[in-house]
Amino acid sequence: ELVAEFADPNSNIGSPDPDNPNTQQYDEKNIRRRVYDALNVLMAMDIISKDKKEIQWKGLPRTSLSDIDKLKTEVIGLKGRIDKKSAYLQELQDQYVGLQNLVERNEQLYGSGDAPSGGVALPFILVQTRPHATVEVEISEDMQLVHFDFNRFHKFLDIPFLLDTHL
Image 1 (spheres, rainbow, N blue to C red):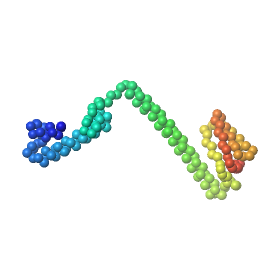
Image 2: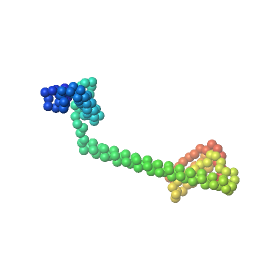
Image 3: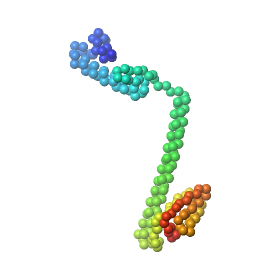
Image 4: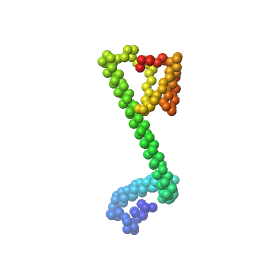
């Protein structure tokens, strides 16, 4: 309908040169493209729906105060999750640096010839705690069960191999 109205010679909104049919054909294609673009934008915003050639008006989106409050609550929750994940990432980075330092120290020890006799038996257990934590370790007589007591937290490990007590 828009293209027909625009192309109508009696209309005041026709092409600048009504005697040139090439200009009019170009204008019609250009108008069709722009209308198609505008309709796609309106469909993406869920303002209209289109089924074949039928276009249905759905209406402009409404935002109520309760919707805004829900979004604000969701933003706060998402920021909290980001903060927790950032803290966890920092903890993992700290652990990585600690392990890298341990590897570097061990390489220096073995490189200098001051390595402890017998080396490190596998498997070995690496435990990381807070700086002032008290850790109690109990090993069963058969060396198969290790009990760690981290003040309030209990962790049991079933070790299938003998532990090297020279660590």
